[in-house]
Amino acid sequence: MKEKIEIIDYKYRITILTFIIFMIIGVLVPLSGDDYSSYLIGKKGILSCLQNIDIKDGRFISGFFTNFFSYNKIFFDISLASLMSYFVKICNDLMGSVKNKYAYLYPLVGVLMVNVFMFSYNYLTINAALSYTFPSIMIIIYYYLINTCDEMNYKVVVKLILLSLFIMLSSIYLAIAFFISNILNIIVKYNKKNGKKHLLLLLLQISLLIFSLLNMKGELFFLDKNYMFNNIPYLIEEVFSKNILLIVVGAIPINYYLHDKLKNNMYCRVIIALFDLILAFSLCYNFFHYSFVNLNLVLSKYSGVFATENWYYIIYFSSYIVLFVLSVNHFVNKIKVRHMVNNLIVISLIILLFILISPMFDNGNIIFLMFTIILSCSILSKDMNVKVYSRTIRSIFYLLIIYYISVFAVVKYIDITRSDYIKEQLDANDTRIEVKANPINLIYKSNPSEGDLINNFKKYYEIPLDYSIEVKYFGIFEKIERKVKEDR
Image 1 (tube, rainbow, N blue to C red):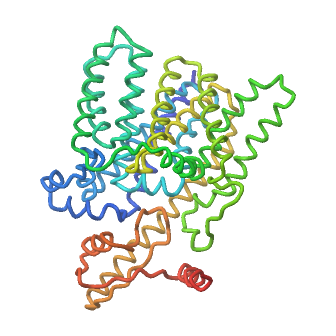
Image 2 (cartoon, rainbow, N blue to C red):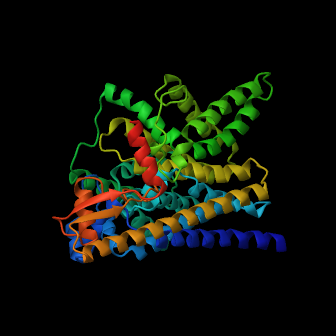
Image 3 (tube, one colour):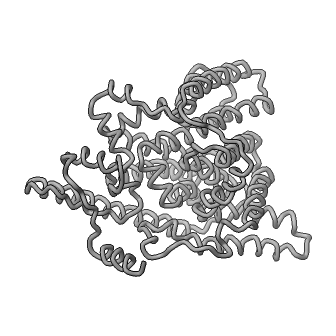
């Protein structure tokens, strides 16, 4: 009994730890370049936030909060840390009781293992976080509530309505995928007890979806065979190659599934080895996506046997998806949990389809698929009885924490020295301002390099618009940049 209480206590400590980690990161990071314009809007007050909502792809609620949070960043930091910790809690709750308490670190390690672009864009860019990360976690919360509540009382219904409002008015792609999944959910699993409430929620969702579609600006879909076919390598690169670490984690249940199904086949080990070999080489080829500095200064992307343009990757990627779905349905024991995970997979697959058919698609939507993989693998680790190597999982966790805290401490230092250096030049009445370049990719568009970004940067740092600015690397990065330019 004492051991069981200790495990439950550890699970809640992980939830608190997740909140603390994301709060520390939030305090250390400055605004991204994408949020400068929203900061300037939010600076003028609530009315300005309401009057300047970007509705080109259905970002009504998220558009308002982007403007508000950009000027009041501490509220964003608290909200992100709260949602990330709640996501980790849901993963651990769905895992249930585990033999080794360190298994509860899996979802936290998972959210820290996303690629650098996804971390900088989906976690730290207020605009993208509110449009994609927040509604993605809210969809998971929505299905968690539906599948864990036997009776939908007043409090649960109110929560589901509020979640629906945010989801449907944040990202049109997530909204459409969420709505389709809800229709399928009602068809497959109609519950007489809560059926009317589900239908009322569906009616609310379709009303909000129609409102978004009628007020959108831009072409939502572009159904052209050539366009779709040409986008397939792009889809594989954005989903598969750039997220190869989580894809490798997702291959673990596939390995178990193939072993169960092929254990009487003499070629079982050969088939599994070949499946893993492609992932191993792909990991080596795509590992630069996890580097916090821009390795394009040193390396350039090349075409090779593991480049996503090759036709056999289409077959492999399709096989991976099918096998992952089969693994979930083979190993997840609890019917309600399996049903929830299947709903999330359906939404993920619809989002993948949107990459092929929509010219307005934003890669930020892919975060939903990554959350689905993290949640699924956390549950599967328990149901497959995967042996937990305590030292290994703790070592990975500690390394990730040291890595992120150290890098963001450097980011904070760069931001402070940049601001001080700009102020010194303004005080000296220099009309040509040198801006210290941030070489770390974990802050999205941190260097003012083009068009509106330059003007918004000037307004944010109160630099007169008629002044010129020059982004300049310092130290080792200046030498690297000069060397690369000479080689070219």
